[in-house]
Length: 221
Image (tube, rainbow, N blue to C red):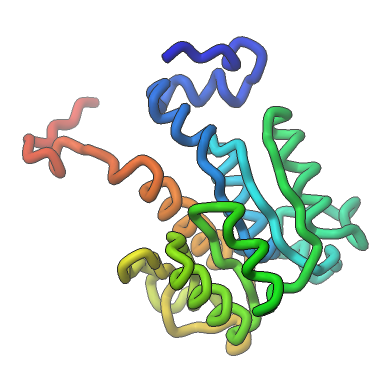
């Protein structure tokens, strides 16, 4: 499968060093939805774009506030702007080939039937516990795969992990809610990275290492 974009796109050119043409094709064809464009969603979106995903659907009703700059993928120039518009700008700056669908709207029981069919895989990156439950339950019932996060507040604290429950992958420390401890960049970004990694595994399968393939691990200096 010949890559016709690497010559004109620096990101694609670089990704060709690490991923096969077949893997890149899968990533470019994938449709990934991100519900919430805050600390989790904005970071996960940029990570997925850096990994080769080119079709994203962003859903968020909010605008960028100065209090968001400590952990979200926005800059002072974005304050006051719609989060989905600001994130769209950043994604296209990274990869002009990105196709980004933006929905500046609330997640409600009424809006989900129109939103969910857009993508087969969704990242749940919402703040409100009721919104999180509503979205995850409806997405799973509709047959979608979902990556969701729970517990990323403060600093230090319990180590983060992941749990797989059918079509749901849950990441975080599962104990420290951002309502209990301040949301700061290191742990919020760590949770976002686990979300993006879960999506990549859904698309490409687990990475094959010598150990997972049953071979010996050797190292060179």
